[in-house]
Image (cartoon, rainbow over all chains, first blue to last red):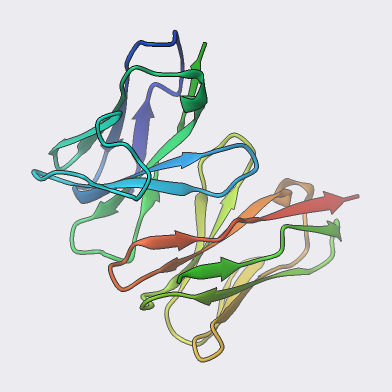
Length: 116
Length: 109
């Protein structure tokens, strides 16, 4: 149990376009989902915390108008990278926290975004 | 501020034992996690400690001392597939994970 999926696993897009990444908890409900970004050989950087039915909480330095997060249901959160630039190329990972289990987080497999 | 320290890189020999240390200073504490991450993949959960002491799970064990702000991950009978980065993370007062930079473990035959 506790499986999180991400789609797509890899995406290549042109500079200036937008890309949507989906994060789904497949066999549990998650009131909270987290979006991370990871640069090569670096640790995870939390971008934002997404709560179902409310606005996401963004970490300092993360542009909320550029990284749009929607948590429309207890099993789905989406991250949209708007007007992508080459510097947005990165590995984006989501994680989901099950209901009433604050100490647990389950990670999706990640999405490799390359902006050309 | 919040800070988690772990060594950048360690090297060990196949079949041996290695201990990866992690020290932390965070606002609140709701447990410490160890994750394994292979290159290009998402982290996978290894262990969770919230009380002092040693938790053993197969070849992997994790230790916590809250008074010292210290944890270690112990890997026994090392295998080549254990070559990976090992991430230490602490859940703060809001259960938000604060991540260490990770320790790259290199296993040599």
